[in-house]
Length: 211
View 1: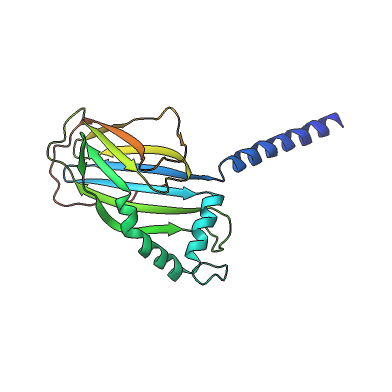
View 2: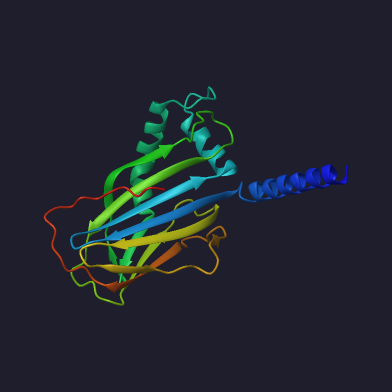
């Protein structure tokens, strides 16, 4: 009897912890930044995961005919409206100087198995790139300024990889959480260049990171 009670109590406590953690992030958007630097190009991918509150808001915008279901054509129209504005909200600075970014691929939305205009999760991915600055040196900082959905609470993480002899080290924030940003404020992700690229590949061959 006591054993049964203890097992049930443990399961209930585990369920409560999971529910509490789940509820904690309903008002968040997770920002994952992937930076890749080679001799010719810098590739920057931003992977945003919208949790319940913000996913619901954006799903309602996608649902243009308000029938409660999101069709693929509605997602495409939603992205078309957002695409140019999204690029403007991301900046790359190398050694304090802005490096203009352009779209490498069209943005993508993954509804994660649910096409309903109701609370859930979904992902938005942006694919950007720029020519590698010729003056990139060891000890230079590469800074990504992210002003996407500044009014939302956010969780942040950054990963970086170099090719053509380049070595990078992402700065790990002490606190991965961001409060809603003030007007004009950016969420900042930093990567240190330990060694600049040296080889010269024939062509750009960007790969999309695996989430």
